[in-house]
Length: 117
Image (cartoon, rainbow, N blue to C red):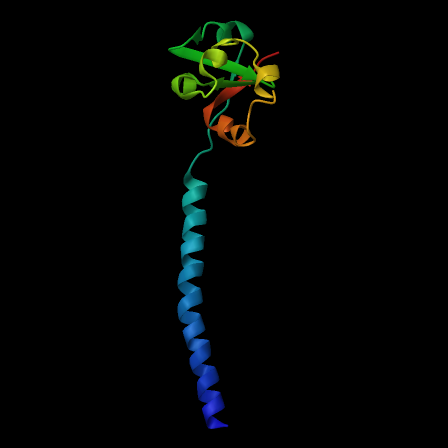
């Protein structure tokens, strides 16, 4: 009986040693994340977006959201196809069959704002 109590107590203490530091790390992460301000979304008119229609300055509109894809133009697997609607609405082309599903997650990294209607 004594061996069972000692083993249980030892197991409990070891469990605490592993669980408490993990809880502290996850709490610290939450505190650090709350201090980070979310990306502020700016509103752009279609006229403003239309000025960014070059390889070296390429913005596109997808579902009323504005994306600065300038840094991606050279990497675009479809070559210059991304420039077809530079400075304009690319929604139809973006949702075409040529894009893999990962592109839908990737595009959010380029979002800079919303389109003003």
